[in-house]
Length: 213
Image (cartoon, rainbow, N blue to C red; front, side, top):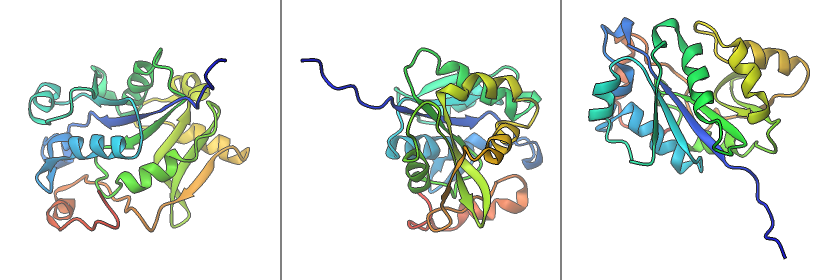
């Protein structure tokens, strides 16, 4: 008797290619909180949320990130030589790297949002039903990250992802058609970005275990 086939795995896709231009050229991936680089914290959170495999897209200072991030050996590092063109190129590179892995969806996370941890990632990941699934975290009625992209959408998302527009436009269209599941995450995450020197104070405050991981 054949073994039952379980659901396809959900891959974690961490976009960590930014140069931190507004931070004086400090790569966001290597900023630290709780003594760990943001890229490592986010990759570990994806794993804790049940994502496998975990792919991390690198761009600016990729060699330094590889040397200093302390990532687990089974994390797949994806180089994006087009990272200066914006987030869209990193999303395309990341989704392309998942070809042939058998994953049913990608849970997309941004490295500069340390207030979004494993709890929110697991909650959005749980919205996966099939390769046609689409879901996103919701904060105070607004869509944010993590975003779940079913594998059936990869090709079209890649076709449209340009400059700093990742899957936003595509999800907006699909929302109008009622195809995007919004997952409230206000109680477990804070979707702030680390973009400017004025945001760095957030990295030195004690981690609130209820909100971040």
